[in-house]
Image (cartoon, rainbow over the protein chains, first blue to last red):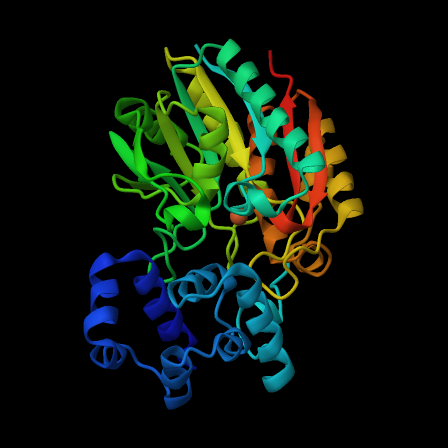
Length: 101
Length: 273
Ligand SMILES: [Fe+2]
C-alpha cells in the first residue's frame, strides 16, 4: 500500500543532495520520515533490490538507488531477476498492467 | 520566422554511459547518424532548440505530475544523474527565457501546460544535446510529456501539442529547431532490459515518417505495453513531432536494435522545408 512512499524516498535520495547527506549521516532517522511498512524498510535498508522491484518500484527510480549502493549495471539487472525467482511476479505498479485507451 | 528543423532521436542513457560495452560496428554508425543530424540542424541556423522529451522522475514525481511541462528558465543544469554513470559531464545549458514565455502563452490557446523555471536535465535531454549541441551554445526550450506511467495523456493530445507548438513558433521572429526524443519499444531498467521488438519499431517508424495522423493515433497503451514495453509509452514525444510537422513526411537516417543500449536506436528527420 505504501509503494508511493518507498518510491518517494528513493526519488528524494536520487535527486536531493540534502536527503543524500541524511542517508550518509542518519539512515535510520531518514527511514522514519517516510510511511513505510516493515518489509519496505528492510528492503530499502538491506538493500533487497529484487524485492523492491517485485513490490513495484519503477526501474527508472530503482536503478539509481542501485548505483548509489554500488551495483554495476549487470549486477542490478541480475538482482531484479533474482527478486522474481525468490518472490514471484511483480505485485503492483507499472509492470503489472497498463491502463489502455 | 518559424520551425526550421524537426526530427526525432533516441536518448537511452546507455548510448553514452555504456558505450564501451557496445559493438563498435553498430555503435559507430549510430554516432555518425547523430553527427549527420547535428550538421543538418546547424545548417538551418536555428536561434533555439525545442526538445520534447520524456523525463524519468528527475524533476517531476507523483506528488505533482504534469502531463505537459515547458521550461521557462534562463539556464538549466544537467545531467542530474551521476556523471560517470551517464558518461556526460555536468554543466550549465543556456535557456531561452523570453522565447519560452512567448511559446507557453501562445500554446495555451490550444493545450494546457505546466511550466517550470527550474529544471535539471536528465539523460532524456542530455544524451540528445551531447550529440546535437556539443558546445552547448544553442539555447534550449525543454518540453516534457509524462510517459513514465498511467494516467498517461492520450496520444491525440500529444499530436495537438505538436500542432500548437508549430503555430506558436510561426508567430515568433526566431528560427526554431525541434527534436522529439524517446524510445520506441523497450523495457528499460527491468529484467527485460535489452529486449527490443524490431518489427513493432519498424512498423511504428513507417507510420511516423508517412505522418498519417489516423495511423499514429490508433495505437493503444495496453497494446503498446504488451508489445513494446512500458518504454513504448515514449512514442508520445515522436507523435508530438509528427503533429508539429503535419503535412510533411520524414526520412529514416538510422535504426538498429542495440541491446546494451536497451533500445532500437533511431535518428530520423521530417522534411518540413
Ligand atoms: Fe526514456
